[in-house]
Length: 455
Image 1 (cartoon, rainbow, N blue to C red):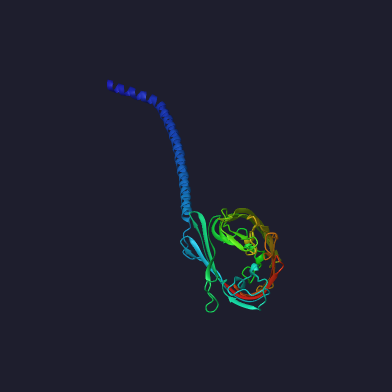
Image 2 (image 1 turned 30 degrees about the horizontal axis):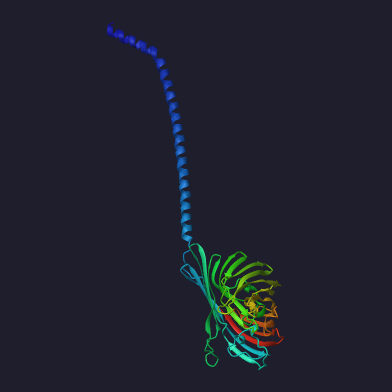
């Protein structure tokens, strides 16, 4: 055997002896490798699941943020509100404001009899009941007829939102003022007269409005302009008012009316330096409504020259009012007011605020006034009001003249028919009496017919 053959044979023998060990080692390495690969695949799958969960959470967050952005944009788009493309049913749009127009046309026909003399043609007493103007001391001249449409009224309001604040306005007028040269011979003219003109900003009011000392919600329905005049707090004037819930407070235009010593003449002074201050608390309940008002004011009078006067004193008053429901349709309305130095606020200035003494000092005049009215609804078309009203003045007899107003009262009843909505026809019979400090008195009896249409 050659050397080469011997070497080959030896190598083959060695290989055959090592083959079983090598096969077992290779099998073990393969199993370990496969286990490692399986572990890596499991870790990779866990990583993929985590990445997918993160992506899902991010997508949900992005969607939520997008929804928030949409809501914010919508909220900004809604404030201030854009003008509506269609006008409201009871008004019309001008920019961000809703404007409304309304009022009524009213014609009065009256027959009046005065025991103490006939008021002159054009006297306001012939248009409505002025207790302080009932003639006293004259002779009855018979029944006087008066026709007029001067209570006709119209108003314009606006309501809107500006810069996040609610802003409103109201302008209201009637025709109660007669022209200087007007009479009833030709056209029976009347002048346009401002009643109310104010702007409101949230809880604030600026302008001419009913005095805060008054509760107009309890005034009864009458054919006359006011009705229970001597017992009613009544006034419209420029003011600044703040209202929060049931409470309101205001500073209002001051004015002092005086009775002169000995002569009893009226002085309308313009010497006030401090505005009148009023406060009112009002509540509304299922049984009706009620209010309590108060006023504090400065009374002032100043003159120059020989015997100059520079005097002030304080006036005050309270007024309670209520409207109480009786059954489903009827109601009782009452007002009671009293104080010192509030004459111009009560009874259309039936008495003055103060009187001048012999030494030139001011003495506030006390008074008590009130009314009660019962409203009876007979049917949906027919209703009546029965009213009693009074005012008593506590004059200092040592200062005032005997021709000074002492008291007044009135009674009235009416029947009103409303055949259709906003159209009224009515008849009212009233009686009023005025008495002076000297005991003289005069009275008025009046029948009033009217027609009124509101729009």
